[in-house]
Image (cartoon, rainbow, N blue to C red; front, side):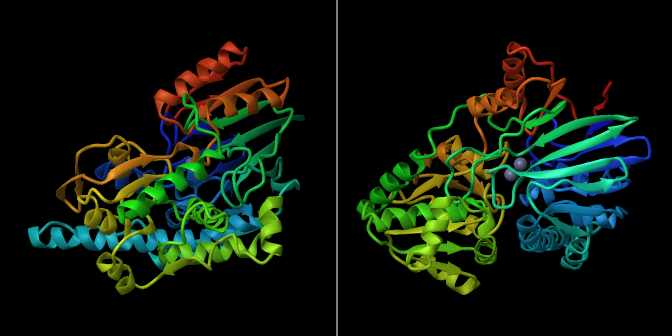
Amino acid sequence: MKIRFLGAAREVTGSRHTVSIPGESVLLDCGLYQGRRKLTYERNKNIPRAVINANAMLLGHAHIDHSGNIPNLILSGFRGKIYATSATVDLCRFMLLDSAYLQEKDVEYVNKRKRRRGEELVEPLYTTQDALEALDHFVPRSYNRWFKVTKNISAKFCDAGHVLGSAITLLRVNDRGRSLKIAYAVDLGRKGMPILRDPVQIKGVDYLIIESTYGNRLHEKVEESERILEDTVNRIVRQKGKLIIPSFTLERTQEVVYHLHNLIEEKRIPAIPIFVDSPLAVNITSVFRRHPECFDKETMRLLRGRSDPFGFDYVTYIREVDRSKALNEMEGPMVIISASGMAEGGRILHHLKNNIEDPRNIIMIVGYMAANTLGRRLVEKERQVKIFGELYTRKADVVVANSFSAHADRNELIEYVRNIGEGIKHIFVVHGEESQAIPFAEALREMGYSVTVPHLGDEVKLP
Ligand SMILES: [Zn+2]
Ligand SMILES: [Zn+2]
């Protein structure tokens, strides 16, 4: 048996690994790599043969860094089925179509410049049509049930408590008469997160592939999120400013809305206007409503009651560009939640550009920001930032709320591994920058585990 690490090795984005035995190969995720612009296109475009030739794919969750390169995978010749939980399949419909739209937009912009300079034009990574065709490959599977993937490999999805539909993927590989169990816990959520159930504690595996986004950091408690949001909204009310929240459309946006809803209901903040400015958010929120099987007890209780935890009473969801632009003319206080999550594209750029130079405003960071993104520069509280190629002086304050994280932190990861129990032969640490992955691996070694932090392209033969 072999595992190959073909993405998200010593970095966070572009998850892509294969597990294979002679004649059979299964692909775990096929995400988009996100980072420095020039590098991303080439890396996403050219998918390694080992990935394309896999017999089937198991998709852990709908985040673009795990699912975003699927249309290109199909274009490149992959012919297998793509298994995922039913909520993940429904989410991917909107996530992939949105991603295709962004690719087309991006290329349009790049080509405009190229045309002026007489340079060769580029093609989008994939089109809306390609994304639609990719959706035909998806096959939904329920949680907690084993199913056959190839002749000798079966799989089971267990709730990962990370985003709606997210799963820890368990593989049972029959390798020359031996049965080996591999767990792919990428990404792994936290206990007590709003809306979602806690991650399922898996037991008794031979090999573990685990994420390390925050392998060397501790988050504030989940409950802190509401308190930080409360303070920040009340500040914005006093300052009559705009609270700008760049947010991942999947999960984080619904979580922020859920907290704001609670805060208003409990009269801890006044009912100021709240705008979710993202057509995708409207669609994603509709998928949430269709999948109550993923909710925790508290959310089920709210749904059965009178109040709406996704906040339609207080929140205005915006699809149209004109209404998005109109927000600019409106006076604060107000909250604007918009995408993209790392502020690399989308409407959030317009809101940042229009509001960053006004000291009454606040930018609130509620998600992971990859290196070299505008979001990361905001986390690092840089004074001067470039938006649409122009330099802006930041006067709006930046509030970083780590408690919102959908990823387990160092202690939560360690506790999770410890509770798997005895018998782990080896652990592979992926999906984390070196500053996180290496200290996390070291901590696991000190606990007595045998651990590797694979490099991109590494191939490991398992005994
Ligand atoms: Zn994720
Ligand atoms: Zn991820």
